Amino acid sequence: MPESPPIRLATRKSPLALWQATWVAEQLDALGFACQLVPLTSDGDTDLRPITSDSGVGMFTKRIQQALIDGEADVAVHSLKDLPTVEVPDLHLAAVSERAEVNDRLVSIAGWAFEQLPSGAIVGTSSRRRAAQLLNLRPDLVIRPIRGNVQTRIDQVMKGDFQATVLAAAGLQRLEMTDVAAATLPLETMLPAPGQAALGIETRRDNPHASEAVARLDHADTRAAVTAERSLLRHLSGGCLAPIAAFALVAENTLKLRALVLSPDGRTRLVAEQTGPPQRAKEVGIEAAERLLDDGAEAIIAAAR
Image (cartoon, rainbow, N blue to C red; front, side):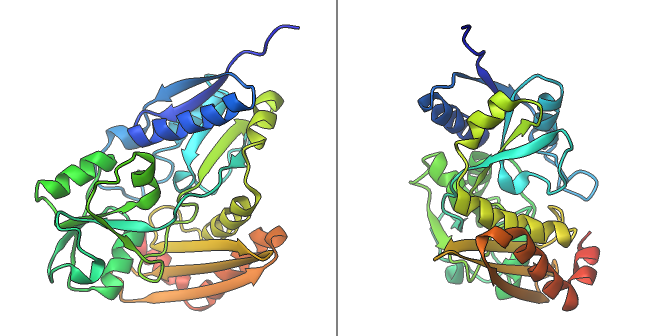
């Protein structure tokens, strides 16, 4: 019987994306599936202008998804927080990896904790979610856009272009940047983006070989948590630009979801918490979204666009 051809994994070329795709390939290889990486360049890798409503949705994922549709690859590996919640008809999310640390970290030359940032400190972030939460607690801070990969953003801080920036702890850990002066932001200060710290692994629906192989990497509790978070985001029609944060966790067979909607200036902050069984993760997300909409989230999200 002839051997199956290698499973081709489409990925962006950034160091973090390559780490993620290599990790997936190693897991599949350990299960007996040969793999081959297919590095590609996305719009988000080449266009470093501030993200807008015209450019933002799918800018890191469309090229990778197109490679699946066109048959260039069998599997697409994404940072799940970058994957739009509107499904592509021919593709499906075959697996969600076990989540890494979900917190964000404050990176600065001095290694300041959030409370230690000087008044008027310039913090670089192009994430409205991060900016709004920072300003909600510290309206004295100055937020300016920053783009580029993890190392590029760190370098801009170290050169003095910014006094601090905010990066995902998972990315720093995966790139082994443990020597960077960074303070962990507690969830009470900075709630993550929906899907943060998990990998989303997509396949074509008509490719059972790749789908069945990848499905072995699915982590049930993480899948339930991010399903609730992404369901909330989709029901709010939030996309990647609205200041929406969400984090769900499965503990003792109960799914607990906490979500925020903020105005871009941080002055308005809506909170919703919802619980339910993991099997109802999608419904839990919708119920939390409905509570936020009842409190006025629609107008805040529309203004943010």
